[in-house]
Image 1: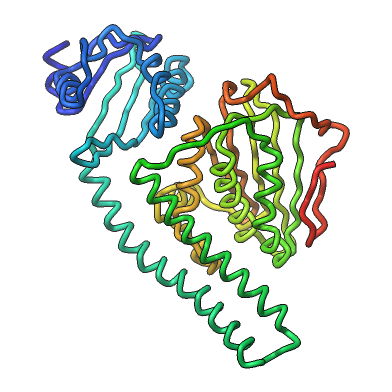
Image 2: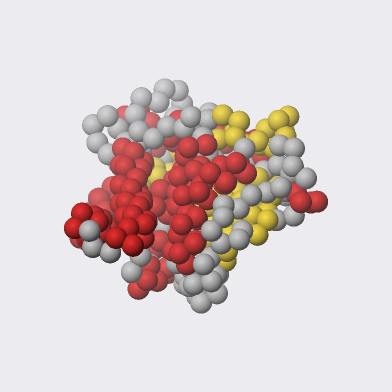
Length: 376
């Protein structure tokens, strides 16, 4: 078996169904030695325990891989893959992890270096991204200039309030684009860290809605909130706001006039918190969803709508959820709508600090267009 494994240039390991590493090939050993890992290159150690010990920006990926392993071991699926960054002090590197389950209850894990392929795709994506971003930034800046000039010249004095509102909307678009750029830069450089504390998810949703209320007003989109009694969440409230503002903005921007957006939060079957954002918008095909989750990717629906965007917001939101050890999934049907589900693991629920809300008696509050929705 050793000779067979050593014939692979990629790093290969064999694990039992409990996560214990049974064997590794020479490429795995060389990689471990090059990156300063001491000991028997993990043989005999439990890979799941190693994942649990990961901290910082890499923890989210480690938790995703561990959950993928457990799903394979239970027989829930036969194949798992995950692309991740593994940078060294001298170079940036990207790998694809592949896992498969075999009849003898062992799992084969392979790490393939895809840096060249990744950088090639990234370069091509950057080219299209730069052209789109220049256009998207120019549009709101031109709008600000035009409305400001009309105010300066005294044109349409009776419409000054309308002009000011349009300037604010254009400034919000510009700020959103810049925030997407800064967030993507932090994520790519690995400098994005979480400042975690006991967080009231309902309050974070309220604060996020303030930023999208004018968009909902302009499109007459109704916002509905519904929350079960929930514990506080161990999370970074600022980063969660970034996620929610992005998802809520998309739900409103790509909605139909007079449509609706529903935000619900509940306890999952595993005890974790599950948040869903459902809209009645244009919806996406499966290929559109895949494209939307790629950095710089914009769906055909987004391009056809004419709404500004960098194609960075959704991937960045997904990255932030991963850092919180959560999982974001998207279900969508063209011409029907889209539902985004965010599931946080049970250990992030602070059960001893439960938020006192009787959602069962209060029920969801429907927003009257023009007023920020609240829960009684």
